[in-house]
Amino acid sequence: MQAIIDRIEGNIAVLEIDGTRFMDMPLAELPAGCGKGDVLRGMPGAWAKDEAEKAARLKLNADLMAKLFKH
Image (cartoon, rainbow, N blue to C red; front, side, top):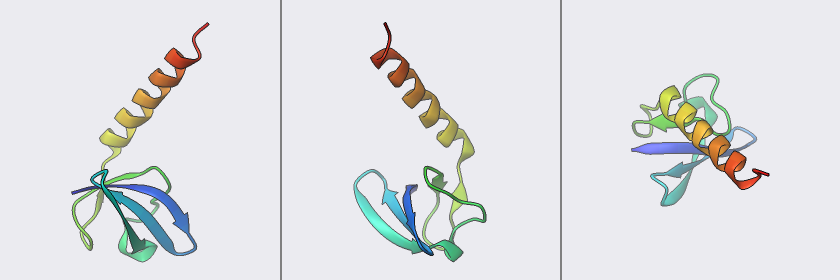
């Protein structure tokens, strides 16, 4: 299962799960130092950060923005 942290509201993280639904999760149940935009793999209670996927998504977004605003 893949989750992306959509936003943080107080001590709750709103996760987008597999691009199809949202789930609220207490921050205490996520790996330390998680923030908006982080990609997680696993399942509730056993999440791990996926830094490679986050970097790939950030690069894709930057490339799309550069293409969109190209002069």
